[in-house]
Length: 260
Image (cartoon, rainbow, N blue to C red; front, side):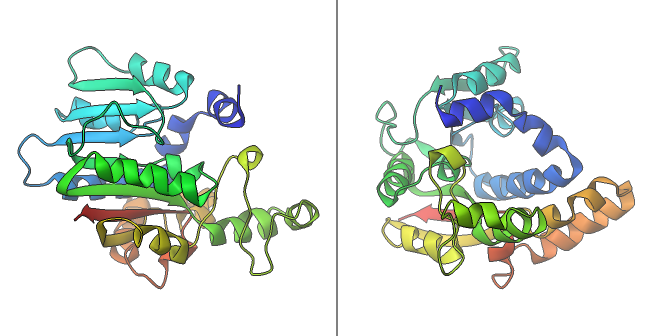
C-alpha cells in the first residue's frame, strides 16, 4: 500500500465534507458545478479522482450521467456502497494520468477535484490536466481543485507549531513555498503556479474560486455556529469567494476552465 492509499483508507473524507466547515467547500463546489451544466440537455459528466463519491454520487442521484474514475480501491468500494442501482453512474478504477479508456471529446463537464492534491511533478500535473482536457468536448468545462500553499504555512507551520519540523526536513523554500513529496501526501500550490499550468493547455480560464476562503481558519467557530449565523457566513463567503485579492489565502481553490 502506498502513502496515498494508506491515507485514504484511514481517512473519513465524507465526514470532512459533511462537517459544517466542510460544507462551505462542498456547497461552493456544487454551486460551480451547477453553473457549468446549466442549460445543457442531459450533460455527460466525468469526475477524475472521485474519492468516495461525495460529488459523483450526489450528481448521479439527481439524474445526471456520471463516469466516476478513482485510483484508491477502498474509496471506490465506499462509492459503490452508496448506490442502489437506479443511478446513471459508471464507477471505474483508474488513474488521472491515463484516461486512454475514454474517448476524446466525450464529456460536457470534467471534474478533477482531487488528483492535483497528490501530483508532485510538473510533468505529472500537465499529463493529468491534458488528459482531462482531451476527454472534454470543445467548449466544455474543466473544474480543477488545488490545495493552496499559504493556508498551510499559516495554520500548519505557525499555528500548529510545526515550523521547526518543516525547517529540519527542508520542506520550506526561502520564499515560503512548501515542498512536497509522496510521504507528505499533499502538494501545495500558489495562484501563479496554477496560471502557469493553464498557459500550457488549450483552455481559457473562466474563474478561479476560493472554495472555502477563510472558513478553515475559523473552523471551530464555524462548527459551533447556529443555523442563522452559518447561513450569513455562507452568504458572505459566496459574495467574496471570487475576489482575486483573497483567493490565494484559501485552503482550497477551484480553477474553472473552458476547452478551446
